[in-house]
Image (cartoon, helix red, strand yellow):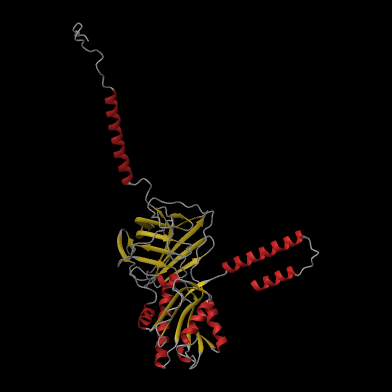
Length: 452
């Protein structure tokens, strides 16, 4: 694009000298505008991805290479790979590619502190060369530039083929291994853990074949996209919402215990968290505890409504309905179905709690939330739920606790008592009367009548 603009500039320079100064100024202004637009478009289209390289027999890396925190171009990555493979000529390169990958995937931790790449951590800990670049622009473009150095290229999709069917080159060559997409009911961390095991299995197969390649792990696109919030959404900051460093209020569920449950739909658009496993009552007697892991957690996504469908072993199904009205979503009904009952029909369980929140907000309540029809009851403790999610994280919390809590009322009551005491004391001090007559030693003694 810059080269094209340069040719345009030469074209303008070669125009006839008969053009007026005003025309030349207009054309140069147009050229500057084109250059500005080209720079802006090139910046906006830039997509930076992380790249992990490791292998053995290459030494401990280039001491003159870039820092892991630098933003690199595709040419920088190409130069680094070329310098690395020059220490071990005729080295095959195996590139594992995700459809989308970002730095947040590597920094993600679950509530127990486990990462999504336990096997990669073990592999890289024993590798002689390990290099991680956090931000590389179009890394696959830099790898494909190796064609200019005589590298042959092959590709395989592990969803359709196994590593046994891949022709690993014995001389300089690149094998692009495309990892498959997410399966049904598989969220992002589960996908990355499965791919982590796939990469380790492929590496073990290569070692058994006596191949010691340079391995690369990266992606085609960035998986981290900031959600865009509609300006028409009315944001309300509740009393119990905790501000983060950026000034926004986000609420993350408490670390799960042995009984806590976090249900996430397969497309990560709905999340439901409860600190204790929900249970079902019949005539106020607990008859079922939903502590087992659901078989399926899926969503039914529509424009004005979303549904969270949770299916358990034994034929238990819960369907949560989240209608969206006027920029606010609400939850009033849960449809309960037990296929093991003789009369296996849908039962609508309603709640008297006001479960409602604006779009992009979550709802949280540390009291018991009960859905019931008078006979069957579904009880949640410390519930937090949110539909219409843009990423796998709860938004700002809309809490069920009233603004005037017991602590606030106590503070106001004590303040009122102290205010009354202070006002009474001030009024008493202001009503103190001083003497208005004094004895004169040279005059007659003051006589105060008893009536005074």
